[in-house]
Length: 515
Image (cartoon, rainbow, N blue to C red; front, side, top):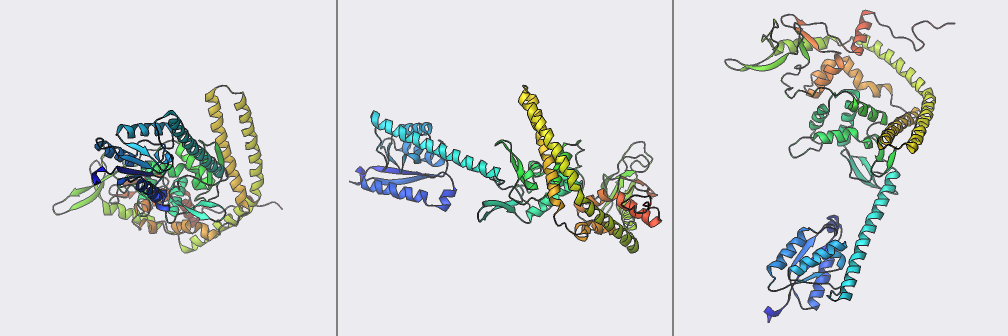
């Protein structure tokens, strides 16, 4: 008697994986199908599920069910679905899956609709499949329109970028908020590239990889494209835009990690002349390699470990043929020891440093006063930029060449970015700015003792010392030492103060004010 019981399988589907964790869509479908099977006296032998869109034909659960039905073609099974929309949400997909189920020898049934082979039943089935497709397309259109409208209002609607996460906010829905400590790491990387602390993108990459908290791939690396995404997303400046959706640049409802001015500086640097790629052989063993040149021939010194009788020894040397110092080694402790002594010599006396600090503070206060009146000139520039944009828009209307139109649109985008930068500056004129000590604490600490940062041992810190302290590479003569190096302006100014050569000019200029 048992052998005559009709065997059946159940197929359930939800649109995405979220519905499997936040609801019981699959469970409720299975329950309804089992009740139908019980009513029809079918024996359910398997249940197949999917959590993908109904517009897709190739689904893991569906393919597994078709294979199961094909294996039992001699004893055809019944395939039960809760509703016609669970099979597919498109007419083409529905017809192909119906054909595949029939080819596997099974019969499709549902508690919601009676499938038949007569023309009327086929018409009703196709109409319901078309309605299901229309509902899917309509839902997609409504979702897309809501996303576009939300983006136009300044809310980011796509996946949260590195450094941000979504947080539900009363009255605003989900908005981007800083994801610490990743946000602070990204901020330092962005500002470092804008200021020139990191000359190359690969240096930004190495900086990000030095933090265990920063997201990496399976190999523990930050992919170069991730670095490019970080540097080119205006989202990090607190703005949103979408070229695909025709949403122009506008302030976002989230907090930016950097200013729009800093973002523009980054884009300018990315478009500037490309620099030579960083050497892959730079290491903590020889931090001066690539920065010190031979004082006799001018070529960069290289470095290596030399094998001795009982141990390996580190050396710098010149490999330029024809040079009198060719292949003549310089002990690492000698050249780096002299370098560190020179860094220590740059440390100004406390009296001189306090005097310079007072002068810089006077200049800072003057700049604050100047900033209060600077917004008038910025407002004038904004008006000029607006007129330029209007002129370009008029030219687009009369242009016939796609290339010319594209060039005009690109220029308009650049002008809009410049306009937003100026608006941002105006808005900041009336803001409460951080105090002098808070703003320049790190910079002044470095000027007070550059050797302290070098002594940290971190490659990023040592590279920063070399870039911030010296205006050019250092020349070293074997047996004599370093030639007089060219230091950057801050250290040059401090040296001038100590010799009495430099004086701070008053805001009015070098000449005494007239009575």
